[in-house]
Image 1 (cartoon, rainbow over the protein chains, first blue to last red):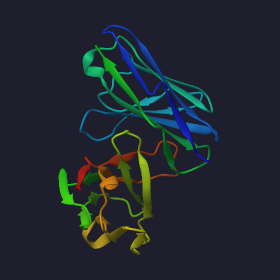
Image 2 (image 1 turned 135 degrees about the horizontal axis):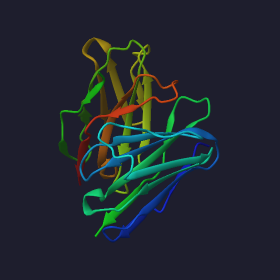
Image 3 (image 1 turned 30 degrees about the vertical axis):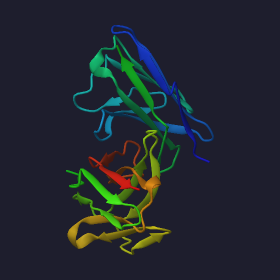
Image 4 (image 1 turned 135 degrees about the vertical axis):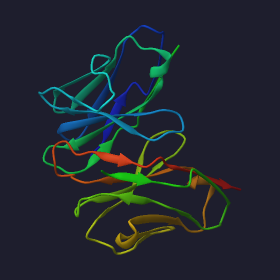
Length: 115
Length: 117
């Protein structure tokens, strides 16, 4: 149990376009999901915490208008990178926490390349 | 503030050698959790171990072992008889409040491990 999926696994887009990444908890309900970003050869940095039915909480330095997060159901959170630019190219990883649970379960990641 | 330091950026060893990855953490809380994750080239994070601050027993799982010492705020990871498949980036991480709704996991910068055949 505790499987988290992400879609797509990789995406290439042109500069200026928007890209949506989905994070799903497949076999459990997740009140809270987290979005991380990992630049090449760097660590995972938390971007935002997403709670079902409420606005996401963004970490300092993360532009909320650029990285739109929607957590409309207990099994799905989406991250939309709006007007993507090459500097947004990164590996985006989500994690999900079971409702009432303590541990985060990580998705396989989505590699975004902006040309 | 919480912080995780992995001083070894990159390590290369020859297959079958033992290798230890260091992790030093900082936290003001008395209750916290420490983790190790493996990230192979595919990118997916693989959970290896979780240890709470009240359990200082060392743990062994096959070729993997972990040494947790609160006195030195360290949680080191040793791979015995390393294999090429162990090549990956290994992250040490810290969480202070996993039961809270908005808890955070703070990751170290990772150690890139190369096992040479």
